Length: 160
Image (tube, rainbow, N blue to C red; front, side, top):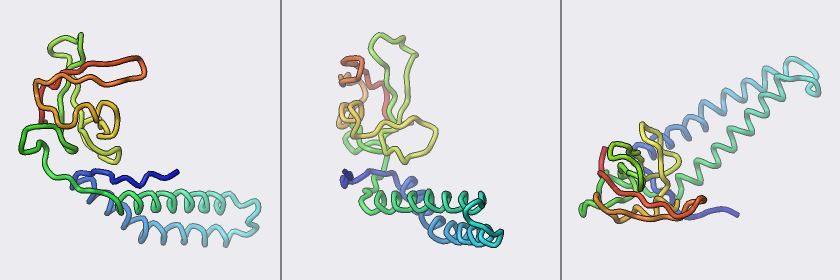
């Protein structure tokens, strides 16, 4: 089963993934073709480890290309860190404190896509925590269902 729902990405993540796709479909394919050609020149393909490794790398690269194409085709680029209303939207950096933790024991997350890279751990907007956070503001307390039971978190701060 495939998920055709849109993935929300920051401008930076969209551009980084687009650049990766461009690199794989140009330089990557040329490099793999050259590696396969060089391995074929070594002789018998049945027992040629270089050939099999190159073909395996080609398969993995083509799989990544298909994944990126599908992701970018349905991606929605979200701008900004905090919405005009001061509530959590995809792309927001949020600092949380779990119920029962000390005042200074907080965790900071980016509410975004699993394809995001950066200094913060990522919470998907479609995850139980992500869904609970969306639309809320600093000072709010939200609950979400986790495998170990219901958890409560206080939204300490929005923004990095």
